[in-house]
Length: 352
Ligand SMILES: [Zn+2]
Ligand SMILES: [Zn+2]
Image (cartoon, rainbow, N blue to C red; front, side):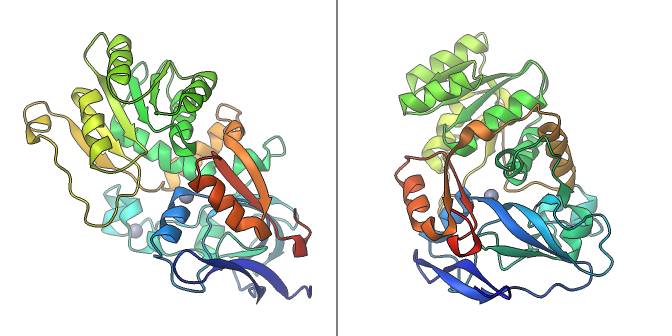
């Protein structure tokens, strides 16, 4: 393969993707070019694929660790060969939404600062991300841990917004990779927090317990009993729903204490309506809120947690495949045979 070409996983419309040869992006001032080391497959990628939301030609993927291949003019914070992790969304920091603390709603934030996307052998990082949000990965931190910094920052934002405090009790609905990442972030970020994980699959409950959960039970009566035991019967301070949809929302409200929070952390189909009792909010002062991404403060805080070793999400990685086997990786997630799937560069680029 010529050094001016690389392979990418391109959407083909609908759910189909194909490994495609493309020219390597040209590096401009303030930008940097990364050689992919690993990229995580995220629930948002799956959602976009299964709903056909991505236009043909789109390259998805945004949870990346790369190695600096080339630096544009004016970039002096990095050197060729540095391992780098960087998010694809960075707020402007100046608009009204940013100044009000809603950086993830900033118009600028939605811009994708990776070209063509994470599922590619090489990735161009745009100036705002290079300047404001890229971090050199410390030598002691594995790629498989650093790749979680973007999703873990999303989780941490939800934790902050929930109002949960040290010593509190949290419930996580869903023991998939995002649910278990909630468990690990909660334990790393808040001292003495108790966490119950709710999932219908016994093996996932066992894994949750081995990762430090204080309880893990199937949804329904078993979960309600476990949460009652952890909270002297009053219910959880915060419930994080990583499942999505109206049924799980009602289950989350039932597990949250009066005055507690429910954090929605999953896609719902467009237009899906909720049907909960309004007095859960008015009379019992519960709060329902959503979080879909992390901003600079959470990204920096998560970097510190991972760099210090307090947060080690590597046990969540069950499969690592070259980009050539993208479809197989997606299928593993769909069949619930995988937790976190990571992709390495294509075989043409020496991956696999
Ligand atoms: Zn993601
Ligand atoms: Zn802004």
